[in-house]
Length: 491
Image (cartoon, rainbow, N blue to C red; front, side, top):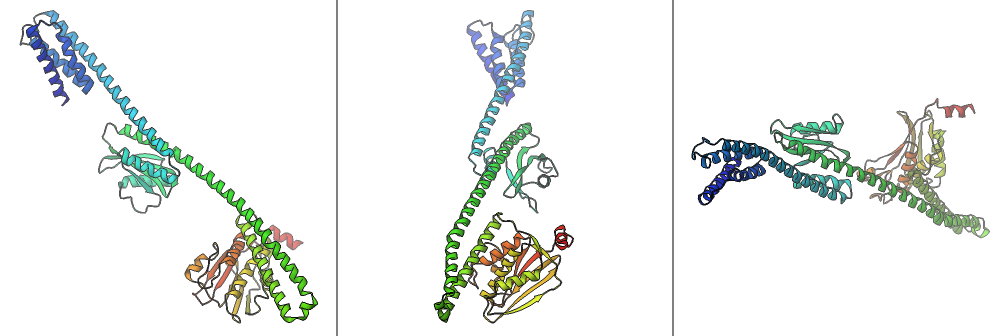
């Protein structure tokens, strides 16, 4: 098509010169033929300009230099004119073609800069990394018309939208067995893909693959650089977003800790202060002759004192658990005998367990454990409290301690309401309301917090609703040759 258009321009110039020469003698033949040369070189490049120069020189020789209608030239001056015309035409074609290439390159560069600016503005509106990664995919696929595919880090099967070679390269990038970016050519379709890792990982996506088009295209390098520039911009924005998110999370965590400390202080003052007054009043009332001589009044005061003491103990445990979960309290570790812990917890809950039959199965050869004795006693007391609360009077409560796999297990088994499968999964997490027991799970959460603070774990076993529950604390055994133990033994 460019050759035909070039010859058509030369033909038009020839017709025009013939018409002009018919009426007026015209000596600027080579100048007129320079016009098709410039137009052809500007529109279609150097080859078209040279073709226009040759065709123009041939037409000038045939139609305007004597003898006419032959390619023979009689006057040597005319030969010199045609040679000069060809030289000037070739130089002009080269300059015009280079000017055209520069103009096209400038237009393409301007378009790329405009698109990059638009893309950067779009990235600036992304509030989080999730918005960013999907904005990049949408821009590449819908604006630049280069298919972009996000590849997950845990894909067991190849992604359906990318060739197998691309998937394998993405897997290498994700696992760190290859550089952060690579260009892959699909052997079947000969299409080139740019595969790049996403770092840091977003929403489980570890790499992005971009279809660059036919690998045989002369613009493949330009397209590759263009896409890489966009991905570099996205990566830089992603790092800024991640830093921003980390700062926001740290700020939120700090604010939460401040509010939590304020709440702990408020609860401690607003609840425990009146409870202390109630307990003090009860202790005074119990010593009054009128109350001591009246059985009904004495039992009423004792009940108030017991329930107020229980509430005070629950609040204290809740505050301790909250402080530990907020990393505000460190357990005071010391070597303890599991049997002593069981006995202390039973004494602590003696009144609560008075209506149940206790069965002790204590291993006398259980090793010492290095824990915060007070916290573990309170945790075991919570388990005993729950067992007494959610099992009928006169039923059996079994307390066991035994060693297993470098651990000591303290368990409490009741014959109460039991746990459903869903409740067993909730045990030890944030307080919840049980379906069978109707409880809030606060005691178990407190116990779990205390046990976890000592490096142990809390487990629940139940055959179902109404079939009882076994709560087990598993605590790690310390080395018998620990320096702290040896010092205590020497002392």
